[in-house]
Image 1 (cartoon, rainbow, N blue to C red):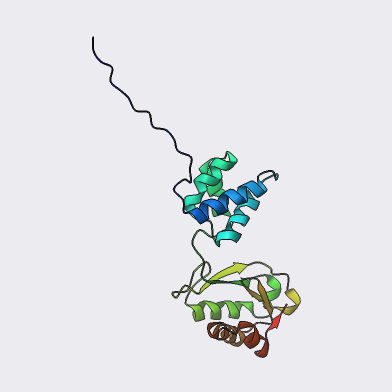
Image 2 (image 1 turned 90 degrees about the vertical axis):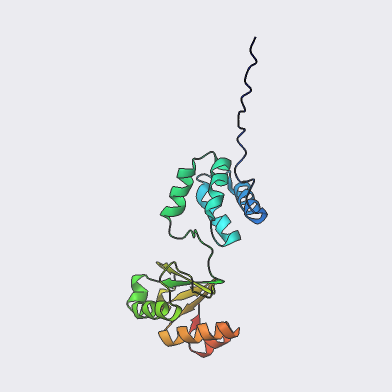
Length: 187
């Protein structure tokens, strides 16, 4: 009688067990807090980005597993919406309004100046890792355009000169005071 050859059957491990602890925790907390919502994927992705600053591509399998979705479905949503970052942002994110009201009062020249001053295009991060520049299509500050937001601070009546003053002040650690003295208004 011949011996049977032993066959090893691989056991599929739960996705995400190899993630850094902060990423795994952020995903699981976001899922647990939002799972019961109708169409929970978007609130979950927002919560993850709020916690981590971006959506690491390596977290997508765990998100999909937890929501019983395919990786392709999660990847499709993350890549469809420009708001979701797939790379770590700079220390500060500058959101520049591109809506018509802001464009009518100088946002086009502000955009060109900001890109030149930072040495990046939209969705890029400056070489020193300090700033990420993102377009946004309305900040709700139309009466005080052109507007931009740095992290969660909204500034109106922004000009290229005031932008330079704001960035210089930020580098010196005095963003708010210099922006106000330069004439930019906080909304």
